[in-house]
Amino acid sequence: MGLPTIWGGGSTFAYSALDGENLNEKALYAHLLSDRLGISFDTPFKAVMYVALKDAADIIFEVVASDIIKANIVDKDSSINSVEIIFIKHNVILVKHLNKHILKFCFEDEYDKKTDGNLVSYTSKNGTFAIYSEDNGEYVISSVAYGDDAEKDAKVSFTEEINKEISEKLDFFAKLPIMDNIPKNISNLASKCFSVLKSHIVSKKGSDTKMLSERVCHKRSYAKDNVLSSMALKYISPDVAKETLFSVLDTMNDDGSIPLFTDDEKKSDLCTVPCISWAFLKLFEYTNDISCLSESFDRLKKHILYYIETSDGEKKSLFEWKIKISDMSSKCEESSMDNSPRFDNTTKAYSVDIACFIANEAKSISKIAEILNKSGEHLYWSVIYDRIKEAINKHLYDDEDKFYYDKDASTNEFIKVKTSSAFLPLFAGICDKRQAEDIVEKHLFNKEEFFTPFMLPSTALNEETFETDMWRGCVFAHINYFVSLGLLDYGYKKEAQKIINDTVMNILNFYENDGVVYEYYDPLRKTSPSRLKRKGESIFAYLPDVKLSPMKDSELSCTVCAQMIVSNIKQNNE
Image 1 (cartoon, one colour):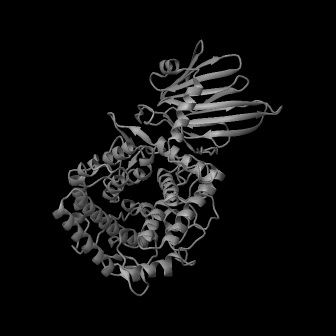
Image 2 (tube, one colour):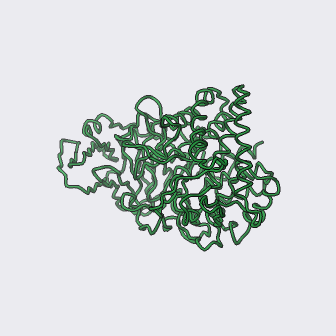
């Protein structure tokens, strides 16, 4: 059993709904500090908690997971003692340390301090932290709680049964897909990824769970990220994967559109990338639970019909994202490729990626209809798929460059910027054999374009607009996954394996160095993701409420990395 063991500043630390009620509006969320053995709380009452070590010569981590930290402190006299930090409720953390060390707190707000025996509380206008501690003569155990009932929660939740709590947390890793026959560092990375995914599982107002894809800053639930998370969530719990997909469907508007994101206050006016039918089909293929298809079928049809009816303005089976003319940094947020240079000089474009995703949804719904013995629906959606496939190849494939481009809808001219979206026709099964050969051999594995030290850059290396700022050149793991699936479908097994191995090993390299899994990466492997731009210059310090840098412990990167590792295990065992 692999375990995440690397400390990383900015790493996720949070409770999961897998272990109990975890309503996000009441839950603690934190991330690890870079320079001390402690955490920073993302609460209205800003706070930092750390263990001030005395006589320490070294720290050896046994576990650094999203809800448990177990560290061995090597003293200058070579004796060893432990520090343990564990989430036991959505708003309560247990801390155990040798009594010569000190648990310290720093607060941003002015506060009133109150002491009552073993209980200390700090109250500001923005909230209350309470700490209940007991010293057994060797170790101090503290229960740290936050919220309106912090004092009560700290007392009630206090326990000396910390080994029992540790055992229950580690049991999560023991139940993951068997990873005994792979290198230890790969197994550790997979466990890190699954641990991050676990931390994003929150409670709905009811008994089910859902994914909250951005717990760090906006506390939003991004539909596409949550849909894709089901790929890896199924290995944790098929039921949670199913609940996550249905929680996305539950955000659907009356017209069939699914918002780009939802939060506690609103739904986005933009729509999500259409890929949920494909995700339901993949979950069924893993679980053989036909109910997930029968219960979702009508809404899945309504969703894709929305796109066909509203995004195909010219009725050519060509589709458009909504482009925000005034916002250059997020000109096409709806595509998820917010600042891609293919949107720089256009206000209206027929885009390769949206057409491929819609085609793939039509193909998926056709397969679902066939499974449900709906022969008429199966045929209907098969025809829709063929129409879109024909339109993409007729209008968006450039025979001269042997490449897929977006087309400006006003001028009917190709937007000749080479981006990773051009390889999505492989994923959707759009290319014929000749087209597949051309884009793979002339472009994908061309060192001047996409064959970089870390494949697959979002913009070709030789484009004037290439730079390491998100979609203007950086590598996103989920695009690599889509492309690898397409390559496998077209018989390019070695090439697909190259991309999968490349993705996992490069994520591993930065995880071992920085202790986190990043949102995106430098295709040239020259710059740490922590220093890359994010829609313009980012500050180096990890202060997500001030200015976003590339996200640390990205749900989507963790999803893809875990899926790639487990898929490789299954493939090698077959």
